[in-house]
Length: 283
Image (cartoon, rainbow, N blue to C red; front, side):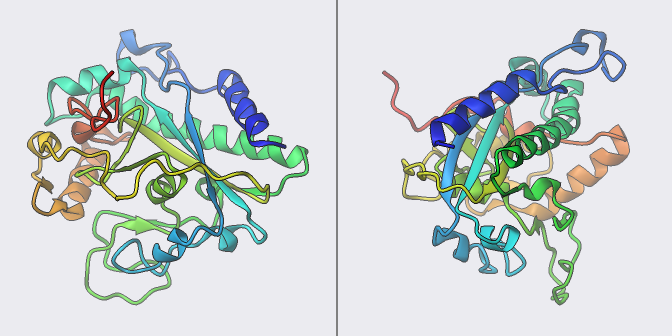
């Protein structure tokens, strides 16, 4: 399978995989019934042996618990990273008031993630039927995630410090693949902006890596500070970036308020990087 064939397969699956609309029985508001959650995904490819993956094991980046592509899939050759931008209806209501989470955004965060898991699993099934070995960390039972300030990552010593992270970072993989760079809020800014969700698949297929159109971690961020102004818990500053502790508490609180859903989205909406790369020159 060539890279172009894989891209065609992904777009075909996007048009047929169920779950990218809000079911009437789940809609928190009548006007959200049947609304589409995601636009067509952006896709980039990283080499599985890219040296940047080794750096992710540094405690100053992700941590020693981060598993590299070869650890997830022996014989890995490439990593396919996908960014699914939210549709306008998901973003629009969240722009209005930063100190609460809109019903549409709650759907995007929860039902949207459920769709991404289903999409990624379906993509892996299609690849395996063509004899391609693959692994999607987000659907793998080995995937581990720590949030809300727990002080240890499973299997590693407790140093008495709040830990936020996972053993596979979709954001860092997006950066390595060429999808985009980090913003002040620590999200990934793509050519379609930051408001959306990420997923990835590791394959044993030798695919040509996407050329990264940037060199720095924050090349797409213009450091305007709007995300810091919109954060309802002052978790972002132009001097220090994002403090994950108050952000984690905010998300934990939203789980109680909006159960069984949760989310925030204030730093991803009504900002210059919501739906575009703000550093790109306009024609």
